[in-house]
Picture 1 (cartoon, rainbow, N blue to C red):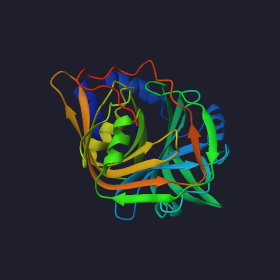
Picture 2 (cartoon, rainbow, N blue to C red):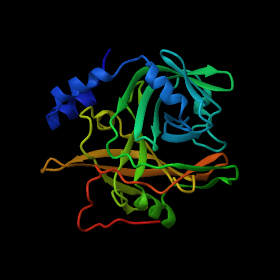
Picture 3 (cartoon, rainbow, N blue to C red):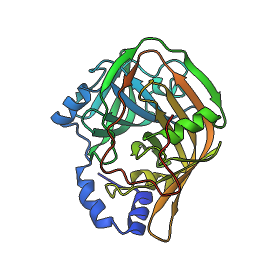
Picture 4 (tube, rainbow, N blue to C red):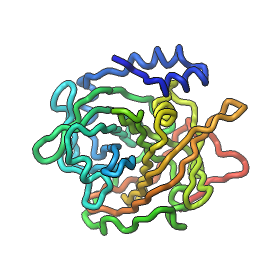
Length: 301
């Protein structure tokens, strides 16, 4: 099994972590182990990344009662339902053979699991035939507790090509977001990014910047961006259940001091408050979150 493509290998070499990446990469497999199957069955959320019919990459949040996503074979998960009406991936996730990335993240326990593969038809929803399955450490994950399901929602409330002021404030206030990337061939991955509120900078209505904090040395996200600049961002508003989805292009900037940041250019925006969403408590921030630079303080909604 090929764990890394040339984009990830190039970043690993540049940063000097090839040996560490090779060691960590042994955790990547195509089998859903029993502990992973149990974890999935407990989750009320699944983030899915894929390209729409125009080739734009998006990340979408799916929600349901625990059990709506489950392992139905050692190399396959089945998801009941699908994206809500108006979601950018509603049509894409109704097909077959589409490359997709998924991540299940549990704020209650700070655990997360990624599964990438291809879409397959399934009664009442869709399935993903797994190609890569692996867990990540709890670093930069904020702890939260579920509060209540909200049955009311206006659906998609705004579409655009740039952020409006309240969307800029939401991005600045975020302590968590998800990023979907692709290797440009047949693979899609979704990863998590977390930090103290304010770690995402809004440089303009069409440009965001965030630091690339030290992680597991795999560099799957930055490796994909080295191969293909398309990216999709998902900012969940945990307390209201609203979502802000952005599609655009991103590139990694390497500083002389060894630090890295990612610059994202917005091309399309979808803001939604769907019915059937789950609201969560205020966060207990991860002790691993780096402090913000002195010129930026925490921001709130």
